[in-house]
Length: 80
Image (cartoon, rainbow, N blue to C red; front, top):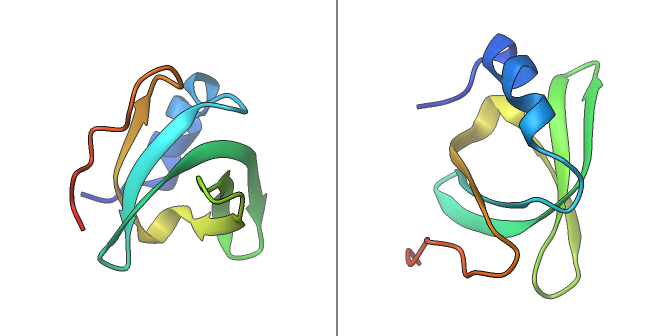
């Protein structure tokens, strides 16, 4: 299920910079640490830093299954 813009606004205080996040985007599982949160002309977005150090931004409207994990533990996703 995708998050609505209003749901994201309510959840945003719980997602701080450095929070570990995982989600599906265009059918691919993504994992990283939250770097920025913003809102632009195309809607809400956030940027994560992947394990390999690459930064990438994702549109909230296309994110599915967003969850948070502790930086001291591994993400739960075992999907390819």
